[in-house]
Length: 160
Ligand SMILES: Nc1ncnc2c1ncn2[C@@H]1O[C@H](COP(=O)(O)OP(=O)(O)O)[C@@H](O)[C@H]1O
Ligand SMILES: O=C(O)C1=C[C@@H](OP(=O)(O)O)[C@@H](O)[C@H](O)C1
Ligand SMILES: [Mg+2]
Image 1 (tube, rainbow, N blue to C red):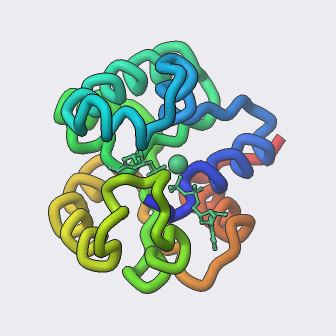
Image 2: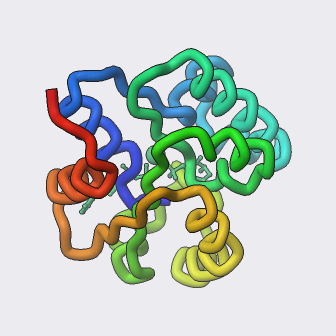
């Protein structure tokens, strides 16, 4: 959350000359409401079910760069699907996370005590990110453009 998946994903797609898609955008468009509203109205499990479908559909239909929401990898079926794809895990430290997300109501899981919430989420998830990733790219002290370049290099992707 806030590491730059959506920003960097878009840059990588531009550099490769392919399409960009983001499962959070797909869910928002399909539901006609924000991610925060879905969490508040229906709860996190309902959001995760929508997210699981959105990821499966996007992986099926979309040949370009796909940005996932940070919690998509909580689902075991999603992790299994990702095994067939070149997945980059973008990492950052907690101070950078708080700087980038702040008290951002668009990210409901970080709305209260973001520093502690972020640490707890990462402790629960880090091994899952590592499990699905072909490469881990640190974003600390790097611009989004530098991160995009590091991902292209690490995955040996050639620009258009
Ligand atoms: N490398 C970076 N350095 C500093 N800020 C960044 C970087 N990448 C993204 N950001 C900023 O951090 C915030 C979160 O980025 P976003 O792409 O939405 O992350 P994610 O999709 O992983 O939640 C945005 O304000 C974005 O402009
Ligand atoms: O990590 C998470 O559980 C979430 C990350 C968000 O996406 P980003 O990682 O793009 O912020 C969004 O899907 C939702 O707020 C839940
Ligand atoms: Mg995003």
